[in-house]
Image (cartoon, rainbow, N blue to C red; front, side):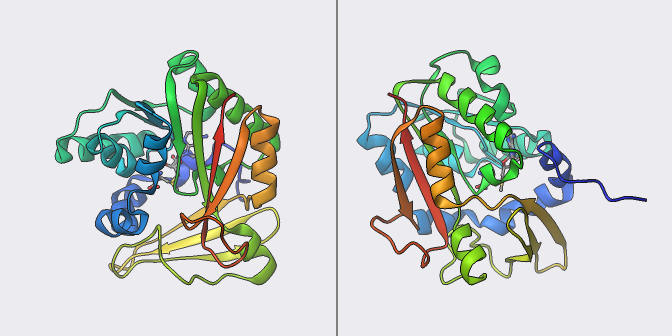
Length: 254
Ligand code: SAM
């Protein structure tokens, strides 16, 4: 039997019910709230954002936090398992969202129509799930369409420059703050990094991700028509190119 090759739809199968059931233990909502310390809220507020689409909402962490902060939030994700869990978390948290539904990034414009949002956030290293350059372009084109002029897009990713050039190390844990969990690459190559996520109960899950280099991601955003692309490292600017774990890329639709 030959192994199935990774493609741009593989994420749907990778986020099994079991993995999704463990996801909140991995990110640890309280720890992540602390480590972000209002970064996204401050940034969106500074640009007068009212409506936000959390387009890789996963189990709903940012959707809930941003709704608590007063933004009008739409949550979507291409994984039905994630959306089901997000809906449960939204009910449990008591916030109200505008909408919560399954949408692939390449279909955002069909789902929501043009200029529907002041802002889009695509967080948690999600954009690494696309393996084809053309799929990344299609996804960014669709994101561009659903943003209003002047709107802001935030995409984050691991510091793959550091992983590829210097090997994996993590100094701080900003994103995966759950107790007793571990997230680390078991395969590192220029075209694919396989990460393993381990949990205290012995569960293990893997994700195959495309290692987005910092400059490549910024150029992709510019190529899609976004302007004023600015990068943060672990929520700060300026930052040391290699000495941060996660990169936040902020871009505007002119
Ligand atoms: N943002 C959440 C967080 O930080 O906890 C989830 C991050 S998880 C690493 C990546 C998410 O992106 C998954 O929920 C996955 O289903 C979603 N995703 C991956 N590729 C996608 C695509 N092409 N369209 C829509 N969602 C996608």
